[in-house]
Image (cartoon, rainbow, N blue to C red; front, side, top):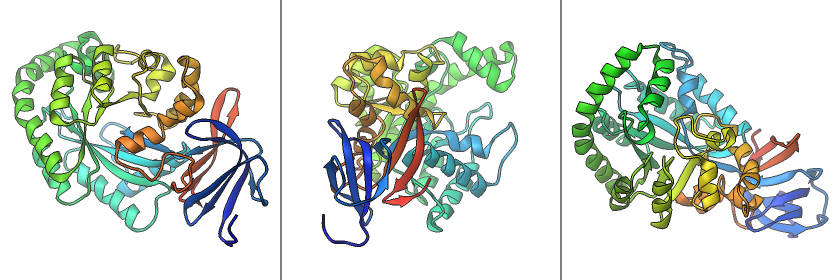
Length: 383
């Protein structure tokens, strides 16, 4: 062990490494992991009392910020207050790198943030510049492709703020996530309070209008991402034709494929497959689509995302080995750490390994449930 006064040692931990779980210690200096050892540490450090020590979780797709900013219909919270409350929840869930998933494009029925998207982006930027964040925040624009204003909105956004991931979404009823129209009526009836007749009328209008808008907007968004070097994700691919389109467009990540066929084809062609952690924990999709557990058993699940429940990410990772034979705890932890980091082009985090960022999480298991005890970002305690 080098004689450096700023070295911090985490000892007596069950360390989840890329290929095994090892009882031992980790040494951190200047925000990086510098050494890992088995057994007793060479000197006293923070005794983790046998708790797990994991890499910090990496979250690529969570729209949870919007629920802090718009907690009730027609209610808007203070943007910076919403951002900081969201950040605290993210960090306390063990997530040290988060892609804030902001929706671009306004639904004709009133969904979407519209100009408020920039207000949230400015609040995120203020918190970043003033060092208020507990974890690292990057930007994921969720682009509603058939929206009439989506291209202009994204162009305006990327001219001011950095964007690290763009996903191509299309929630037209009768396809992708909502190919089951009964599920669509149930979902939007509960969400909007509109009558069945009103929703059916909107379905007919969207079906007629959205195809033309998508045919125009999707190529423009793909071109914009390519020109700016922004990674692309597809959203809710369902058919082989949709997967082939994603391959042609250079998509890197398949978010929430809705069928086993789409997931297999994406995985086979080098597109990283992401599924929702709530899907795994609940035992299925709330939209009636393919279960994450089925993809895990098929060997085509690469990444888990917390989607709408930040705490679900860690819970699903610990539950995954029980759900799918042959998946070890290190394999499962990789779906929420190394795999999302690498798919997003981040090579410096996601593993307990020498030279990696000291983004680390202490976890106890209580009654079979993993509980975040402490969180460090680049060696600095943040939760």
